[in-house]
Image (cartoon, rainbow, N blue to C red; front, side, top):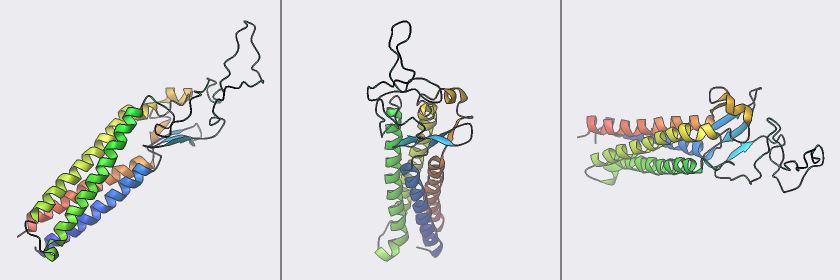
Length: 229
């Protein structure tokens, strides 16, 4: 194997490794989408596995009790709704416990599961592509023949991983992000994506991971094609 081909193989392994690490960190951290208040402070963050929100009276679950301050029975004789009121819009909060998978809202759980599955498969594919690129790079020392096959399969694996990550982005932006501010935050529902909701650092890390994974696989394949025996 010529020197230039081995150099391409080494650089390919390094780039795929960096991309895989970036994507893993992006998947593991809880800020794919953020919702900010009028002061620019993040009040809701949502990731693939967990979500969170500030504790300005929102985290205490409803236990069936009723506050006595301002909760007296009105003139029509009907009891007031005993559920805690959201401090931002005054609406009753959902008494259901927060689901650690969906971050507290159930209507996007299928989309979140699809995103999580695609990201996990992308990690597996990128690791496989990195191993194959390393085998191509080390094949002279290992005495392995037909090494061009390693770069070809590595390219297919890394491109498939990048495609899965892109699919995740599409699902997230079309099926998840529109519902991220549905924690009974009425003002943010009217604001929309451009005003109150945006992508977080976790999403950005996965974007760069996707680019590096695809670039690394392509670089190794080009090196194998141009500089192989």
